[in-house]
Length: 197
Image (cartoon, rainbow, N blue to C red; front, side):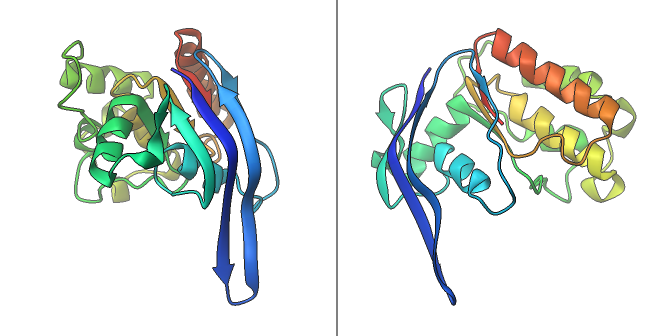
């Protein structure tokens, strides 16, 4: 599955004028690619990921995944498409505060999936993989920042996405846990998924 940006622009209007977050960006991300975007804070990295994930409409240009123009889809169809194809790790986690770790991860289950995944088993596997077993019944407020980040990553991986968009997934982790996360992302890429970090 290929992610393609073609001359994509996105700017914001504020009290101090226009900010061009993404200016004439074109690139392609294919199966098995693992690409990291680097740059200083405020340069547009998060905006680019939101555009790629179908969460933020560009002003101009085209974004396609597997030849499907993301922004030609209705909001509902785009959400379904995203659920079926894209995993997203947000910088601010966006965990549901009243759900446990297990329920936060399982909440991402896509009911339209082809049925090859047992979501409860997959959630337990990811909880074990990211060292969250002792925290599976805890709510986000009872977790460390690193545990919340690992929960968010596990949620993004539940549906075995073909494209994973990760906004600083190791930014809140110690060296050991950062290595675990990067190893898992590398495995995902080696298995054929595209990773944009």
